[in-house]
Amino acid sequence: MSTGRMMSVRSLFLRLNHDRTSKKTSNNLGGNDIWLTERQLVVGAEKFIKLSGYQKIEFNQTFSQGGYQFTSPIVGYRSAIQDHLNETVYREQDKGYTRLQNQEAEPMEDEQKASGVFGGDASKITTSVFIINPKIQDYDLGFFGHIESILYDIIDSYENTNLVLVTDSLSYLSIITKEEISVTVENLMGEGLHLLFMNEKTDYAFFEKYDDIIDNPIMVYGV
Image (cartoon, rainbow, N blue to C red; front, side, top):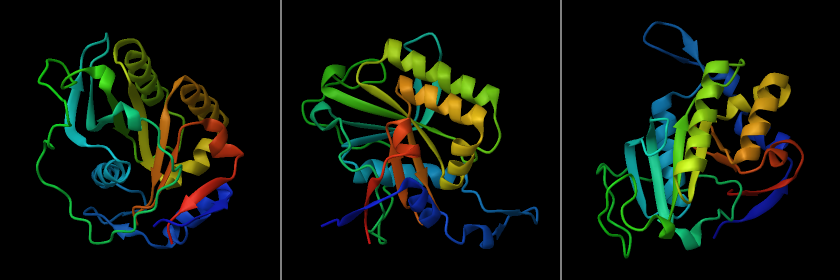
């Protein structure tokens, strides 16, 4: 059973990022980079999805029902009765976790074949669409404009669907200290964007509201 205790968000991210700046890994070009790659974040997001009770996962799904076509590297589906995450922060504890290689999970109960991105009655399924950006360090008008277009398209065209931005936990400092980024992220989260941070140990911090990133103490689960 998971145990938990209250912790300030700043303390949480000090914990998530502890000693990371001194553990640089060399890439093939001989440089150093402490940031997670997109591939690492996709693998971590898959673990997070399964820990969060989703019954189905799909990869590289294209969404084209609205006016803005986009592709998500990973999408999670679950019964609508489980559409709220009770734990704000997740910590990976199963170190022997094995990634499933099949691209299509077993259909959920009562799911029927249908056209579009949903299998079956969309009103019975909650969908979380994940977008990956490892490094949020400087204000990027093009990237945040892209996220805004996806978010509004989801709001207008998809039922019971959430957009989750997945990033390295090192991005936290820029999000809370750089005004342009802070204001943009706050506005997007006010419209429904969720944030998922993770580090190289696959520890997670998931947020649905911007205020929780800044002010509120949160429950931390794990050892």
